[in-house]
Amino acid sequence: MSTFSQFSFTGHKALVRVDFNVPLDENFQITDDTRMRATLPTLQKILNDGGAVILMSHLGRPKDGPNNKYSLKHLVPHLHELLGGKVKVFFADDCIGSQAALTASMLKAGEVLLLENLRFYKEEEKGDAAFAEKLSKLGDVYVNDAFGTAHRAHASTAVIAQFFPTGKKMFGLLMEAEVKSAEKVLHESEKPFTAIIGGAKVSDKILIIENLLERATDIIIGGGMAYTFMKARGGKIGNSLCEEDRMPVALEILEKAKAKNVSIHLPEDSVIADKFDAAANTETRPSDAIPDGWIGLDIGPKAVGIFSEIIKKSKTILWNGPMGVFEMEKFQAGTKAIALAVADATRSGAFSLVGGGDSVAAVNKFNLADKVSYVSTGGGAMLEYFEGKTLPGIAAIKETVS
Ligand code: AMP
Picture 1 (cartoon, helix red, strand yellow):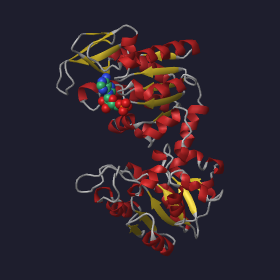
Picture 2: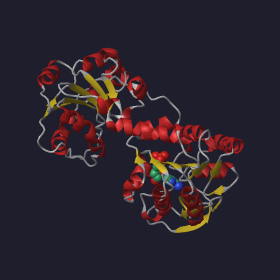
Picture 3: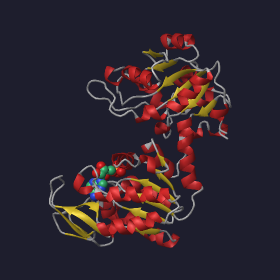
Picture 4: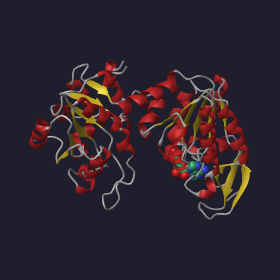
């Protein structure tokens, strides 16, 4: 059992770092509360144990101190509702200082205090130790449940851990689940292990591909980034996305894969369009024979067939990045078919992890989120994890995790 589940929060004040960086509309209504919901099991366990919860988070990217637009106070009514409507939720309009300290000290078991946006202080992102120490005084146990910011060495995500003794700092349930599923893919993957990498830019995904060359059996490359590989191999890609300066590294990756016996699969055909527009004229062509003026915006039916077969034979699947411009109906078939293939493979016993903003949006769009093994909440963090980097938020408390 994990440290968090074993810990009894009775009589404790848990200082919980969450990722409540949710999108708000112009009336400060939350348009997607996924991140808040994801952390509820952690909060409920602490409250049910008879502990009190002090929440700290960032919201947006405030530049110069307090700004109503980025105030976490807008989240209080919804948090109250998500916690069932009976739990008292207080708000402190500063995350440090005398008011925050007083409210925290008066907080009773079963109550929640949400602190104001941490990023109203520059010290947060700088990882300032004195600021972290001030925050640490508000609670007696530190719980990090903010996987979305685990790749940042900020005051509240990493530096703060040093002010709590071993046994009094731990991952929350969300963070644990994220780390466990990522570890399963990276270090305990059953073979064949297929990584599906898509999205717009090669430059964003080079490190992840290089790290996966050490682990995967097959790497499927789709989306806009596939055309840099196509062109590097001498193909004609018309006006498709291409990062010319990344063509040498694309070739290097293809060579390395050969040497390591990893199969890299590029889309044999593409759905091409005469303009980047939902109402464009479309045709299907080989991905290396796209006429001038035309743009590859989705993988084609042959590619879907080949990719789906590989996916269905896999025992471990990692998916990051869409296969095409799935936001437009005309270019969503490839991404949808791949999502279905991942769901099929999962049904047959494969472990599948979907991570990274747009592939998560895609499985949600096609209502397949509950048909894959795990959907990660942390875009950038998950990416860095799969690049093989040590995430400061994880490293800071890892020694206490069993
Ligand atoms: P990323 O954030 O790098 O995973 O990229 C996701 C974005 O890539 C999505 O908004 C897609 O619309 C876009 N995308 C995927 N395939 C293509 C393509 N063939 N051409 C242009 N954009 C694409």
